[in-house]
Structures are given as C-alpha cells and as structure tokens.
Image 1 (cartoon, rainbow, N blue to C red):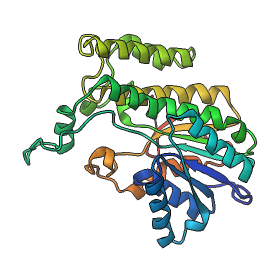
Image 2 (image 1 turned 180 degrees about the vertical axis):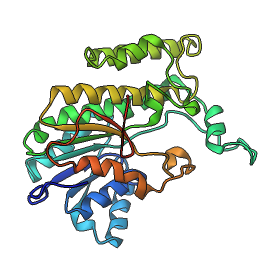
Image 3 (image 1 turned 90 degrees about the horizontal axis):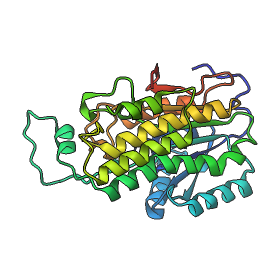
Image 4 (image 1 turned 45 degrees about the vertical axis):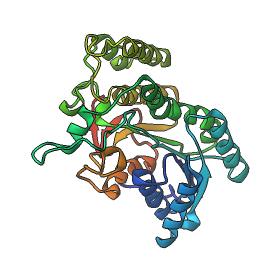
Length: 305
C-alpha cells in the first residue's frame, strides 16, 4: 500500500479495542511499529498490563499505552474519551476489534480425527438468550457506542479512520456453509438495501431475531441455527459501516474480515497467524487520503456485503 508522503509526519493516535491478545494485540504492535501512538484497551486490567509487558520485549512499549475499557459500558467508554481528550486532544484511528462468539463451548465433547474440530464444536455449543444479547452488545453495539462517543475527537483529525473487524459469517450475499448464513429474506432485504439502510432498520432486524430466538423459532424463521447471534452481530456491524461511511464522507470507514486466524475465538483452529490476520485491519487504518470508504474486505480483497 502506497502512503501519502506526509501521511505519518505528524503524531497520530489510535485506539484498539479487545487488544490484550490475539489479533487486537498484533494490530497494536503493527501500528506502533509505524510510529503510531496506540491506546491498547481491554476489560481486564491485569491482562492489559500483561500485554504491555509483552510489548516491552518487542521494544514497542513506548508507543503503546494501556487503558481499561469495557465496550458494553458507556461510562467506561466515556473515561477513555476523557483520557484521550486530556492527553492528545484528538483521535486519528479507531479499530473496533473487541468481539465474543456468543456461545458456550463444551470442552468435554470428543471429536473424532476425521471431523472438523471447530465445526463440530460449534454444532454442539450452547446458545442462550443472555449469551446472544451479550454477543450483540459487544460485537455491534459496543463498536457503535465507541464510534458515537469518540466521534468528536475523530472529527478533530485531518485523517480520521475507523476499522470495524468483522467476519465472513456476517456476509449476506454468499454466506458460508460453516455458519449457515442468514436466509431470512426480510432481514437480508433490510440489511442489504444500501440506499435505505438506517440504524433503526438494523435494530429492527436484531429485535425480530431476538424475539424469534426467545420463542424457539430460529429454524422456522430462517435464522442461522449455529452461531446465530455472532452472525447477526457481524451482519449488523457491516451494515452500520455502510451507514457511517455515507454519513461522514470525510472519514475513511471500512469493515474487514481478517481471515481464518488462529485465535481463542476460533479455538486456535485457523489457518492464518495473528500477524497475517492483523495485516488487513492495519492496512485500512493507514489508508492514505482518497482511499476507499464504506466497503467490506475479506483480508485485502474488496468483497460484496
């Protein structure tokens, strides 16, 4: 990726959510290595401090600051905003990486060697309404609240970038066999109508899904039976990305599936390293002026929603 010649001449500030491990931590490493000042955030203070200690071994800790953050808690987000305003007075990059799978995995289930470990684990995982709501609160509303709260600071940047870390699971047009994507025609119509897409429309889809979930109607209403809330949360995040990009044309706002990465959320069954997985979000975070916005990428390839 070619960068504009003056793009990194002034100090640039980034926030990465869910950054104490996995892709989030690696995104912090790669941004810091480019001279970006990175605010590494995590819910758990001990784990966040441990991540900073790990970065010391890489010689990058001087560029990375830890701040506790729970993306499902507005007051927690407000504290991060106040910290950034007092310390830097602006924000250039927001990477919404925090995410949960929204299911309980049964560690005792025995998988035969010829079976796909991750797929079989997903099939027998426990889904509950509480877990579904937590998933949506983290993966979608958490990102949305981060953006809304930090928007005034991003508007003070001369190169604001928002990167929403998504998944192929939320892709509407094709979907993937593993996740048995959304087949509810009404939901697909609402979320794929880029001209008329609204935040209220996204909320309406989620509320309809949750109602059907509580009533045991997922299958009959053509909602995905496996990883249901995770899929909906990522589809909602993708839709919100399009809404934002249209609303703020001076920003570069994109969502990206980093690929099948070996992380806790994939039970370390991925095919890509965290270093490879972080490359795509970092690329979008460092897009030069005039770069793409309102798009969905699978790794570095432009894809349909």
